[in-house]
Length: 249
Image 1 (cartoon, rainbow, N blue to C red):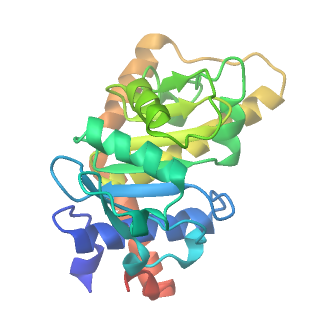
Image 2 (cartoon, rainbow, N blue to C red):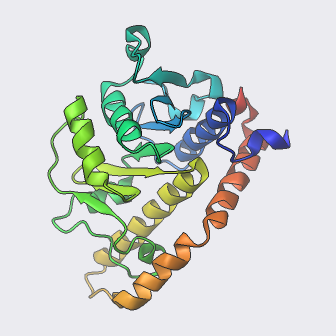
């Protein structure tokens, strides 16, 4: 059973298991949005083939075998009928335009979405978690409604730029990076960061913002411990394997 919970991206089967684990855990910690939102993982070097969740299936029920394999070079209308149009528009364009991105997670978690609605949605470095995102998030400040066409997907991919995080103004958050484990930990931590920031704002006291040089050093330190992120994900998969083993089916 150990090989089933490796974070390797070397096979479609492993990517299915890892992505299913993400769905299950984010549902468990109440970061899902009814039967909406979507995660994807590319399984080809050029990003043209990727796995994604079927529309209107609750995150808590998703199994590895439920994920749908799409090919942007050969769109299958029958398969696309089972995909949220916004999922296709966003994820197909990001994987095509940024083939280095192997995993894309898009959510509307409460605290991060709350920060996205502010006139100033920048995640201020006020503690170790928030400092992880110092100068490392791009911001969409022009909400365009439902992202249900390729043009909007291209716009969002362009806004993501060379970063791995896009705060989608008045909308939510998108994480796109080279590893499912890293993306998982990043999504978890960005929501924790925004929870800390929202709580601090709620006191109506002046924020004690960490100086730029210390915030930058902290962010770089975070970038140097991806093994921490992968270890976090491995522990989550072990818990799921013990408590909800059907996610690997």
